[in-house]
Image (cartoon, rainbow, N blue to C red; front, top):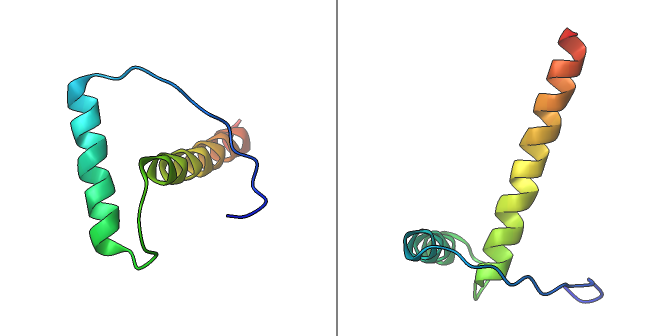
Length: 65
C-alpha cells in the first residue's frame, strides 16, 4: 500500500460492535492469504464494498425513474 495517503479516524463504538469487528477481522485472517489483517484494512474493505452497492442501487433507482 505504498503511496496511499492515509487518514486517522478515531471513533467510539459499543463493546458489542467491537467484538463483531474482531470476529470479522479473525474471519478475514483465516480466509485470506494476504498475511496479517488489520482492523483498518477490514473497515476499508467493508466501506468500499458498501459504497459499490450504494452506487449500484442509486443507478438502478435512477434507471427506473
